[in-house]
Length: 338
Picture 1 (cartoon, one colour):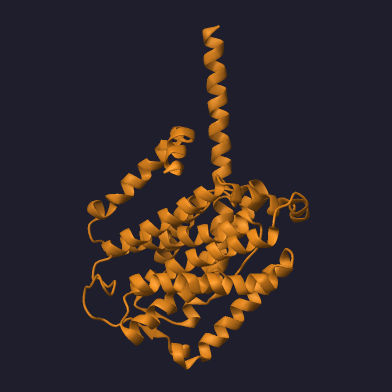
Picture 2 (tube, rainbow, N blue to C red):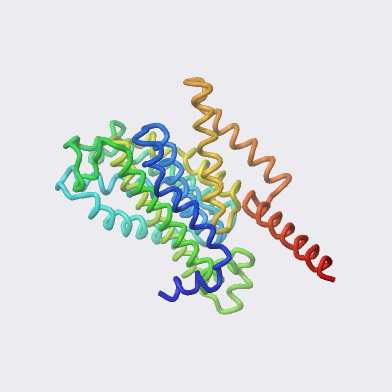
């Protein structure tokens, strides 16, 4: 309740943020049940949520992680295995996959967080590749063949619909919730501690901050957020396998989206996904089957330009421009009054 009051007291000037949200709520009514357009929106929402997950542990806490897609995979496999083995709805599987992912993040982080910077990043890449090999050879979870969602007709229980509209609202809700989580963290004492750890971990320790605890906290929340997305993604695509979900390029795309949008900000991942994902889909349409991998080339070129010319990202760039225009406008108004 206090957070809601603070939003309208401290950020009432940012109420315009609600306008795009209201517009998104009516998108399915505007475009109709147009499969491809709704699919693009859904993928944008997926990467907003995954981007916020990565942003929390890497953008705020400063722990460069390349295993977000693995926790995403845990959520997908956990919910689908429960559905296939004991006919348990993914709505319940959601609350099983999230703590499993958070628990694995705790075990991984408690062993690896003594590594700093690029060494931790390399360790998470190694962990991701080990998990991919394990799942490729683990017959209990389908090994390389993967798992298929049982087609039992449109059902709220099984989270299966012939229309993409329900998935649109599910992934929109996940994108909003993940952004709100980062928003709350950004304005909380924990967020202040995360930023202190990112800027100077030794200095944060000298100030009395339990850096191990807060790094693990960020990692566990991030893992749970990614698992929640994976839960419903499995129901959306109807088929999952290690080669598709455990591709390291998924984490690379998440990183590029956040860097492009502005790392360590609430709205950076939103802006990054809203621009880069439709751009990649457009390339696939224009180039057809020959576009495989070219979207990553384009993303890489854009990131290089952003890092070179605007290293803070697009959101910070736009924010600074707006502030500059606002200051100039105020100065002009003061001069006209005088």
